Image 1 (cartoon, helix red, strand yellow):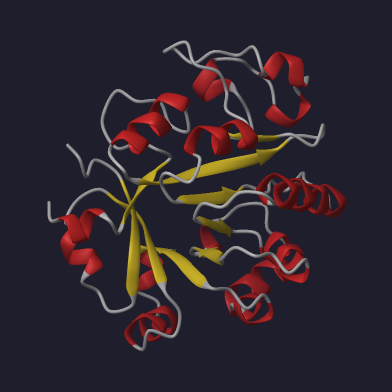
Image 2 (cartoon, rainbow, N blue to C red):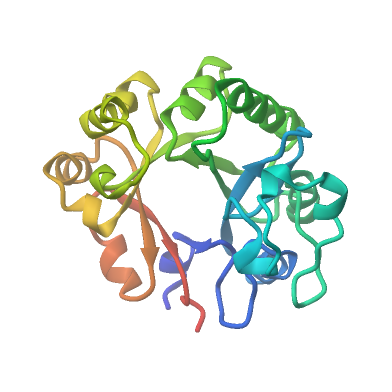
Length: 244
């Protein structure tokens, strides 16, 4: 693959080849070796710690039937992936990467997360990133998280993840209407918009992409990388298998 294409590919959860474990230290190290940008998921813990993990619960990855947020932090820190590595925290991730590659951090905000916990999440994030000098981009599906960070004068680029909200369970009528209106994109003054292929087909995002009103990040792409990067307005793709 051409080098100009590779530099615009971001490894989804660090998964750039088969056999690696998503969001794990081994997947991150492989990306650093290949000088590939990394997308990871962040989950907030009531202790104030931020963990690099996608799911709300630990069952799928660790076969441990517990919610990450309700699990004692000492238990989380002794969990091991099948390769023997430990669950990463945000601080351990930053110490591992040290600015060698760009990081795209997705802030997960489950419905159970209260407003005060969202604020604590954002304050913990800002504290962890305060002395980091590498390239960081932050995105979230949750407009409240983005709004809190924007009002904190967050120094890194902020992006809104957007999907077809009609397919998302657990939203109230009001929440669904607000999200469908996309007014939060204006309120939060997002720096980029992160879309899947289905959402890119919506008229409003076709226009944003075509006119290059905001940079578009496209997820999750598993083939035809050059074709998707050639779409007007698409600046980056969050991709898998592009080294295979």
